[in-house]
Image 1 (cartoon, rainbow, N blue to C red):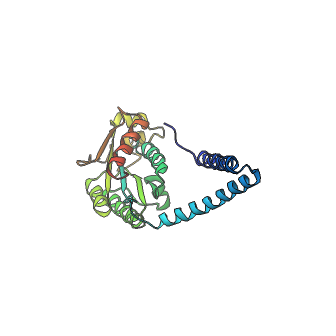
Image 2 (image 1 turned 120 degrees about the vertical axis):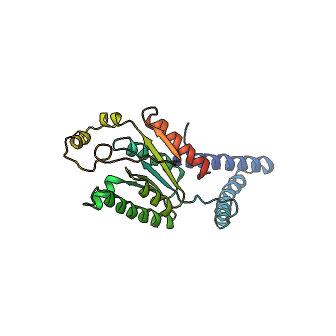
Image 3 (image 1 turned 90 degrees about the vertical axis):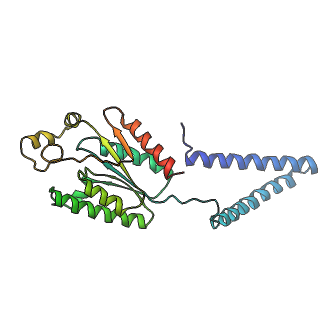
Length: 241
């Protein structure tokens, strides 16, 4: 599948204008036999039509009929650490950018870098999720959709996010814990098993699987590209029409 680039569209517009003007010049010359008159008519026609097109576009810009607003949504990725949330969410974000909509990417690591010392206890995590919910709600009030990836291991915090935001879509990135360990190039699982990390989801803290996720992606069966296609297709069918 190919996407039309801006440069290609501009070049097509210029070549079409050249073809149309040349046609006008030829028709006028055939009728009147005067090249100077034909060229003048062709150039005059081009200037007038460009102006009329601009006025036509400005008029239609003010007409709301036939325009459908994309309501802001929150695409919430949850799953075990190293399940593939961030990688898949990044790819989905890249694909959604092609729709030219107001969109923000939120990831747990980036947020914790901005707001350090949050803590990893159940209470700390739930409090943190409420902060994220308020952030997403603020973005949605400005018609900005979000692609967010957080472990968010507890059902109560995911429920709070759903209740605080509009058009919340939970994407459960499902992966066997052994697969997550195999992807752990930083050795976080090993450190958690050794007792260096406390409250590490999947090792010494629980992950409560979503009961009502709109989309479930099994990363042991789907590639990143296949998973992102499934998610974007779902959005196109529900919210981006």
